[in-house]
Structure formats: structure tokens, C-alpha cells
Image 1: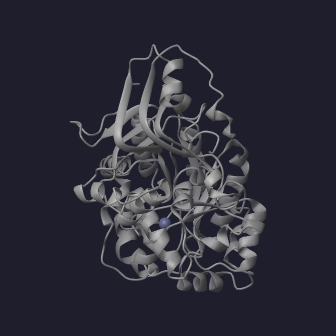
Image 2: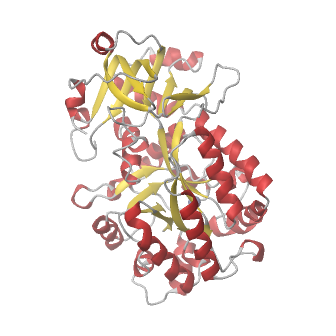
Image 3: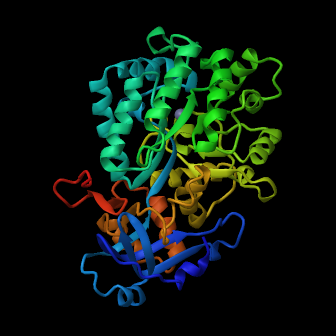
Length: 462
Ligand SMILES: [Zn+2]
């Protein structure tokens, strides 16, 4: 996207056309590698024109309104900041019922809470109920796209995509492949059966409307070599059609030691995935806290992406993600933000940004609000290779939007009166970390969540 969107207005009218007016912020370039002040567009009083779910124009209200003066359906948000919908690059919807469980380190936490809960998703009714609650949680927080783990069962994948279709959200999900080192009810019957089922679900859901499919081995220890081999082949077969490979990498010391015991001749953890054809330009690796330099280099060369999960890493006492290593300009790795619920302790990407700053400061590295908001929007879209569709407010983009409430509480309204720049305002929004900062969420131009409406959630008309 080029900056010409500021003055290259093309008038296309026909069908359902609407406007959304208010303060607008969107990124079009990467502030880690270019001057942050030249990476975004900000309109203190802007107007977005949407037609059939696609943004067809955006700019200063006075200029755009003149071009589209016949449009009467304009929603005006005062005391708000309109941004692209947030992108959660790694989350387990099936763990929604165990978020915030008192626990231990990663492997004990999986044994104690995660595996017993995930066995329940063979029950479609249960999966349907959790999917419904999950979508309400993320939409309430302004998240419009997520890269999601289901679990072993077909029912868990169907329940998720069926709910996503109702909202018309652009989502990535898939069956989790896991055939060893976990309880029997959750274990795949065989490598062959599991990969066959994954392919069946891929054909059922990939590119059905806005839905996208991912091949998901949980992590190296829970898959046999045969399953890793077949999963890698499945990904390679479909990657040119936009299918993803989604898994965990280098989250904790004990996990890395386990992988080393399973693959004693491997150079490192990343190379194990790579040996099965899984490190590629549509691969998203969650965590990457404890990376060796050669692993970053491999990710850079393969153009794969990392999902930074700060609240989960703090909660489970994993390593600290080093954003300055991931984004190093000579071998940058695409980096998005993720909640990793239920290891993460909330569904809010804004609150993750709060933790991004604090985890960085544990290493005496600060990170400014522009970089944070970039990773939460356009950076996340780049990590998912969807930067031509979502993550920005520009002509041709899908109209997924979050509306941040600058009067979410009396205190934040008062606190913001002491800021004198956009930069300061954004940092206060992150730092206060409130739960109710998002007041409305649009999916393909339809307002599916409104904090002040009854009902708050509405499925868009199909
Ligand atoms: Zn995870």
C-alpha cells in the first residue's frame, strides 16, 4: 500500500454504501524498519466509505464527504479512535473454559488443565457453546481475525468455523494433530487417520467464504515422526493455495529439552520442524522465546512468522520473547501479537500490548506505542500473509474495524487530557490496560458488536 491513498480518491457508488466518521489511525509501512512517523496515516476527523463490506475510500472528513455527499448512512464516533480490527496470531478457542487456572509450568499446565478440557470437544454441543462464547469475547475486544487451534476432533473444527461463518469473520483454524504423549481420549487413532481427517476438513472449510485452514501439529513432543512427516506433506501439498502451518516453538526450557531427547541428532528445535517441511512462508510459530541465532536466520530465510504471546509467557513463567532479535533489520522475521488463551490471561490484544512493553523492559528494551499498534494490526496481517486484505484502513481492504473508546472510564478521559500528542495518547491506552476500551467492532462493514446496544452482539445479515 502506498501513501497515495491520501489523495487518490476513486468514487464508486452502487449497492449498500455507508460511512464511518471519527478519528482514524492506520499503518501502511513497518515502523521497525522505517521512520515510525512515516508509517501511518492519522485523521483527527476522518471518514471511511464502505461498500459491500469493502473499504472504497478514506481520508479527511471534509474532503471525502464532498465526494460522497449523497451517502446518508454515516455513523459518527466522537471521543473514539477507529483502527483496523486487531489480529490475534495464536489462540486456542478450546481453552476458553480454563483461562486463569492456577497452575504451574507449561508441561504440568497442559497435563493438569488443558488435556482434560480438550477431551470434551468430541461433544458437538459443548464445542458449539464454547465457540459462541469465544467469538463474543474476541469481538468485544475488537479482535476481528485470529489464528486458532481447535483440538483433535472434527466437531471442534466444525463448531468453530460454523460460528465464524455466522459473523462472516476472516479466521484461520484447523484440527490439531497429536498422536502421542497425551491422554488416550485426545490422541489421534493413527497418523494416517489424523492427516486424512485434517485434509477432509481442509477441503470442507478452506476459502469457504472468509474461512482459512491451517495444518496444526500441536508441538513436536505430541506427534510421532510418522505424523510429523505426513503433516508436513499435507502442508506442502496445499501451501500454494494459502493453507497455513501453525504450531508452537521454543516456548520453555523443559519443552526444548524434551524435543532434544526425542530428536538427539537435531541441530535445534526449529530444524526438527524444518526437516519435515514445516518451516516455510505460510508457517506461524507461536512463542519463540528461547531462540538461537541460527533459528532466527532460518525463520528469516524461509519467510516464516512468529506470534509473540506476552501474557501467556509471563503467566506460565516461560522465557522472555526478544522483539529486538525478531525484528532485527538485517534478518527480520514477521512478528504479530497473540493472546495464547488459555495460557494467556485475557482476550484483549490491547492488554497484550501492555505486556509487550513490560516484557521488553525486563531486558531494558523499551518499545513505543506505534510499533505496538503496528504489530496488533498491519504487522499481524503481514505475519499471516493477509496484508493485502486486512490490517489496514485503505481502499480495497475488507472493512474489519475496532472503535476504541477514549471515554471508557472517567479516569481515562481525565488522564488523556494530559497527553499532547497521538504518540502519548496511544501509549496511555496501552499502559492503562483497561478491559472495556473497545466500544464497537465491524466485520466486513457490519457492526457485530456495540457495547451500548441491546443486544450487544448481532450476526450480520447474509
Ligand atoms: Zn498455544
